[in-house]
Length: 132
Image (cartoon, rainbow, N blue to C red; front, top):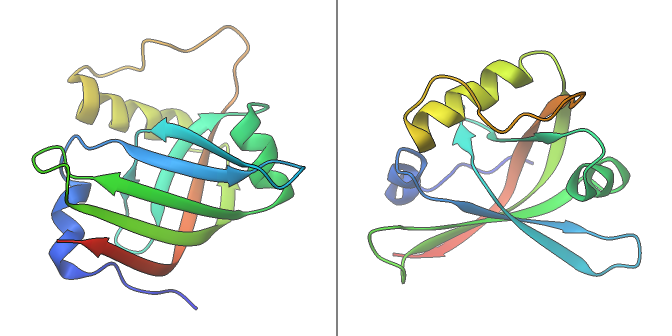
């Protein structure tokens, strides 16, 4: 059952805060990656490339945790436990360009590799906690 992001943390989605995305490796070990993200009002959206470790982990087990630390106050954070409910290629290039504008201030993602297939994950928040 989807849970709402607490109102006192919604400002974090407008800041240039990085998120830490935790996925589960095949042997049960956690795998954590810093990522760019945004919020569509219901879901956390994160991009990646098809075939990366986090992509393989999410396709095998959609349970994830995302933590966002406030860049203006490192003691303030939000933890979101949830699951990836959608993986899509359509719109993923536009999404990474949107995030590139937010994080780098340029219009087009400058790090795309030859033959790379971009994907976007929609994460349904199931539990939220944090420190104000």
